[in-house]
Length: 361
Image 1 (cartoon, one colour):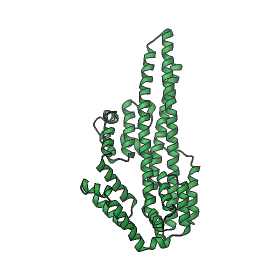
Image 2 (image 1 turned 90 degrees about the vertical axis):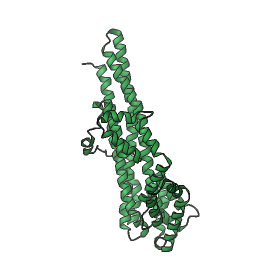
Image 3 (image 1 turned 120 degrees about the vertical axis):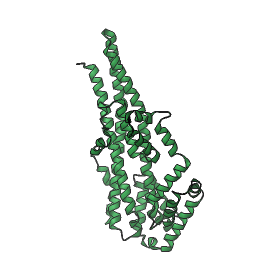
Image 4 (image 1 turned 45 degrees about the vertical axis):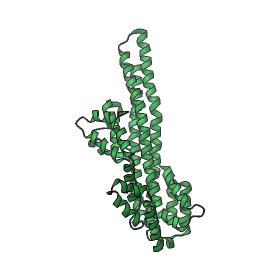
């Protein structure tokens, strides 16, 4: 039964064609709506900062973004947070890339992807080192401590023996299918390593015990980091184009005659350029939304299959991670859907600006 469900997981999600609405509680939460046509520059900045506060993979960025949003003047604080160079986002990101912050993030990822029942050494060590000194964290993460704990866990599972005994050829075939067809790059890499030429049963049980979940976690983080990084660049470009278009439109209102016509043509062209730049960004977010939906549906199918095969310790190990991963991809779908709506509203703003100049009331 679970073979049929798992095989369908990697193709059924491609049929998704719906849209994602902005959560109803979002506006009430911050007073910010994804309707850029009516936004001031400060409100546009608040919208982007809210996106970082809710979806950044870095705790330093999330914390500082919320501080800006909850300040006495959130619009001014949001503009300052996004200022480049030298703004709060840049500073928070630099702190996140600090060596020790990176070690903490690695330890948190281990706790998210290693269950104590199957990887007790790694789990306990990660939990301990989160509150240890920076030097001890460095030693564990990069000085051999993690590799040693991982080896002890592999021996623990081998001595226990139940994971190896539970392996069947169908499991190998499925992992080979993941290596070729899973939507996530890191999951494909992890699966390919588990079934590479010369791989052992230990490699396969490692994949079920932690490799699958860790690959999925890396795919989630990569998706969010890349989309938010690109979005920052898009925002910088579009914000300046909107400022230029609004200035051109304002100037055109005060000029008469042939010079006025030329000024209006320039203003219309400025708004048209905004629309030209916005349209592909909206398409990128639509692609991201559809990819996140595909991932969420894939992991929902994996969860159902693992629950049905829960008597198998290898599949039982993926149940809790699958729940978390499905939820994270659902969040990524929301992130993308909200930005589809936001960039769609910017496109409307550009079209309305051009029409306003061409057809003055």
